[in-house]
Image (cartoon, rainbow, N blue to C red; front, side):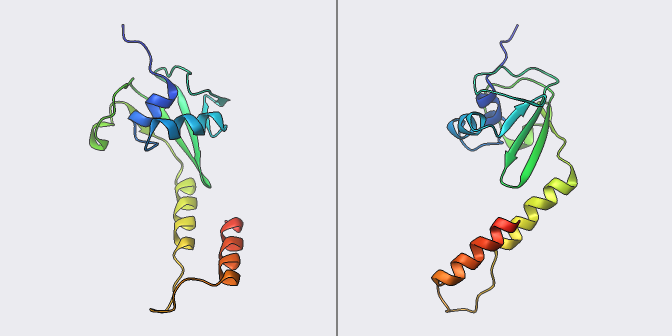
Length: 126
């Protein structure tokens, strides 16, 4: 029987995080839950678990369908994980991405200190 993988390794393997240390940091800071309970990076993942990951304003939800210890290509993830994130959560991510795109006339350069503060205030409201 295969041993269940650690949570940080599983999140890295299903490509939620770019590195395993990023996944471990997110677990330690309380941004990852398993079945609505905060989880440490060393917690073992089991088939049927529901993972919730907070990245920025978006709360992603994943259903564990199979165990995976090695990173695989994004196209090969369907037997291992099901993304059950509600569409309204995904819309939050789109909204924050659009807010980052500030239109500037060509050649006007970087924002001034005041403009940067205004941009930061706008980002906090999202």
